[in-house]
Image (cartoon, rainbow, N blue to C red; front, side):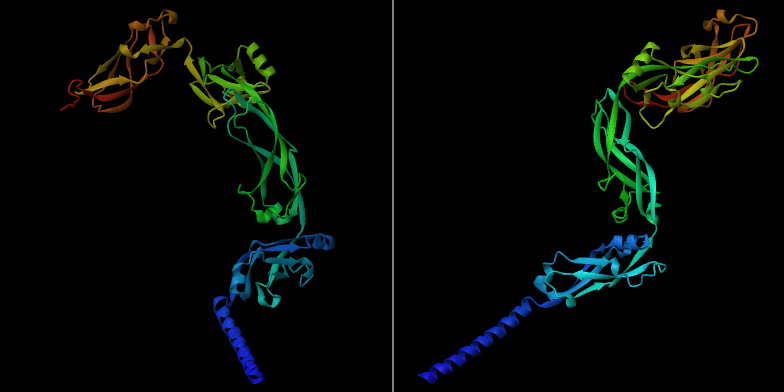
Length: 437
């Protein structure tokens, strides 16, 4: 019996060993040891203050040194579950402290949870670190506006606190900065409001600075890059008229007979006090004579005027597009002359091609007449005969001269023109177009 038990124990041990071997074989095939590469692992810089405290300079990674590749050897199940790989560049481990050799090389230490260090390889094992002078520069915060206020209101002013931000960091990055902006959304506002807004940093090409560069910058406004924006809302007023003071006179023998503006009315916004004063002025804004910069003209003139510099205090012009200028037109005529309107119904249409009809694109044609012997005030437009010659004109739009005969004692200053359109006649009953043969 004892011999039987001993023999049975040996068999059991052999069976266990065989089972372990089979398990090792099976587990090795289902969870093999393998090698896996993890790309774009971010490198964290440690002890950056060491360089500044020791050498008075600042260290930063070039973009190509911001990440590395980590090669790990281990079981498949372990590798597939890895999420926390840490790559660290300790600036106290700079290989050569001779900072004149710029950039310097720093070893990268990688830690992978559950993996022995000998099974982890960093590629590259050393990275380049730039050592630069620290630079500080002040920037005026530029405010940009998005959204639209309530229909009856407009943004009068937006101010930020602070309105200047001081930025320090590596010299090369500071030199990249073109502007710092605070973007303020005013959508739906109808009253003053104060809020916190984020600052955005833009380079010299007006592209937003990358986070890899931002991380090296320090702002006196704080690391949150927020400032306080105060939004002042003003009420709108429509129907404000423009008046132009032009006292320069025309050239000898000429006169400025009329000055018009486009637009002739404005929509503005302003403080309550400014709008009250504007109302007392008859809702009229006057452009001074020196706004035109026209010297003794002999012919009609047209000039663009930036009226923003001539608006009353605390008044702004609300415009529909980016055009901030008003077009001022002046009519210049010889002395003893004036401009009168000739109704287009009074103009004869001569030699119209068969199958075509004429449409004027205006109601009147301006005639500039001069009194030779007659009285300008006594001029009678009904005594004028006028015609246009359409010989050889086909379908289309034209600007053509108007032949005018005036009463005795009057003459034309220049030849007037009419804007017309020639179209084919249409048979209204059949819907067919009648064409000339």
